[in-house]
Image (cartoon, rainbow, N blue to C red; front, side, top):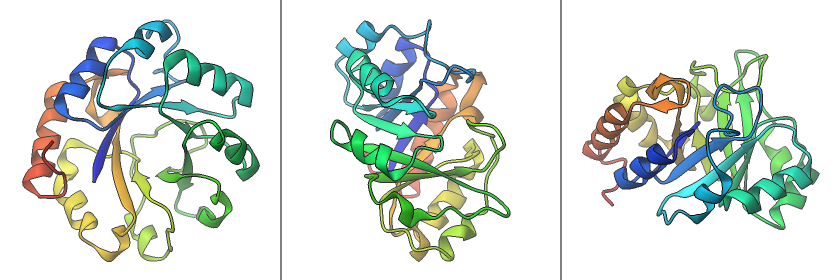
Length: 215
């Protein structure tokens, strides 16, 4: 299992995550987000960094041309689609870069995972009236009732105290395709400012549970 930290707004913290062995760092290209990268992260600076982690660009209903421009400008390794982008849009993007499609799970909302055959991976997040993270979890029993054919990221309100629950889920049959854990707002001191001590402790505890490999 891998770990993604989303909502990065600092080049210094990008390097700190890399040093901690985080696998993916998410940068949000949605201007209504409190973690919007514009004015916070220089494209040239991000693109030229030598990092082991993969850079993920998070987009919401953006024109395809705009996404491809930011992929080139920031040197992105993956694109995460967090809006209402359809399979055709995703397929066009796949000609250029791997695609992660976010699907939203709510109390009365079950995403149709088979609609996104074009995506390379899926990400499951908590449903909300607004785009972006809620800081709240959805019921992970969803995975017991749904067949997931692609590797997926588990997102949605994951917090420092969730290690045992994650470990239990990771060992269950429902997590056969679990690829990565995605953390964000519950590991911050302010929007876009990550609590590195909390992230470091979280990673160490996951390793102690033997669900995260030592690098």
